[in-house]
Amino acid sequence: MGAGRPPLFYGWVIVACAWAMYMLNQAAFTWGFTVFVDPLGKEFGWSRTSITLAWALSLGLGLIVSPWFGKALDRFGPRWTTAIGGLLGGLGWVLISSATSYWHFLVYFVMFVGVGINGAIGLSGSAAVAQWFKVRRSLAMGIYFTGSGGAGLLLIPTMSALIEAYGWRTGAAALGVLVLVTTAIAAPLLRQKPEQYGLKPDGELPPHPKRAAAYAWDFWKRLPLPKHKGATNESSTLAEALRSAAFWMFTTAIFLRYVGMGVTQVHQMPHMLAQGIPLAIATAAISLSLTVNIPSRVLVGWMGDLYDKRWLLNLLAIAGGLALFALAFVTSGATGLVWVYAVLWGVGLAMLPLQASWLADTYGRKHYGSISATSNSLTLSGRIVGALGAAIAFDLLGSYQMVLLISAAGFALGAVLLALLPSPLSLATTAANRRQR
Image 1 (cartoon, rainbow, N blue to C red):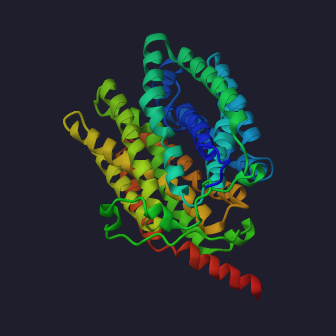
Image 2: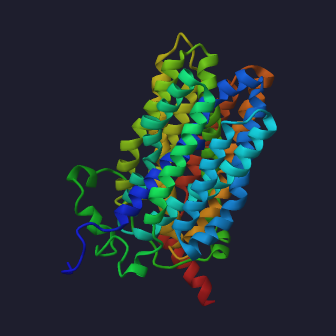
């Protein structure tokens, strides 16, 4: 260990700042929007399809601009993309609190929140963490992605209470101010790559997974799971990634996962309320799933540095499918299924750190921003399909059950695709051989 090495590797500061911004991303769009659905419908008389269409357009615009932010990340780093995203997203929610028509709401939610929260903030944090870690990348990603649990434990219950006590406009304004303040604190602390500051990924840890395994308990070492064989040292370009069959297998599997997430992110609370579940229980279930997700993502992230990420992803996809199956049959007489759903869904959502780490392990760090942004733009469109499909099904059939069952089947198909993925090192060897021809 060098004499001048600081006591705290700056990568963990990156994780902390990225965590705070990801928590806001989850509260300001991903999971928090569901608490605004019923109040907006009651005040303006909007249908579920109309409200969900605004959500889908916001996400869609974010996915369209996301590749541009990915290229900006590779060139300029996460500081400026986070600052731009936080400014737009916070201002958007403040403006939403003053909306008096559907068109006002649509413009503010799509143009400001869509570009800021979905286009910039949703990508910047994972890109920053991927640059600062390699040996402990999955663990760092796992900690970062527990920001959704922070949203479920802290922000979403607070927003729900504010809305119930003072109305949805107060909740929207408070959320916007919080985004602006947090961005002003976190964005300046984000940095691009450790090499630019005389550091290396993971500090001075050797770039080999055995270092991470050395700290594992013997119990975890003996688990009958395939071991992680390390990350590639090659850096694929976006064009090379797009020519890889594994990229499309992975992207399809995660797309199917996001279809189910799209259903729950907008409609889980309306579904439970329609089935006679009290508001307090529905809110508690959402908070429980995101709270369970906190230790799940840390544990899964840590295990991802020891074991094959493909099989861990496969197991978590199965848990997510079972969760949606349980949610489909929730009724006022079967309240227990609410808690089954909440726990299994919290575990299933732990896939995110493995998703981000698998891309970095497989295609390298140099072009991670553009490769991740392209993959996210394709996979996250599944949330639009799921959210709009559920809204249309409810308006036509008066029920979410069929959509939930179809989404559960999508998780099952995704689990099969994830299990069939080739290893990152075999893909790197294939890519290197292709370059030599």
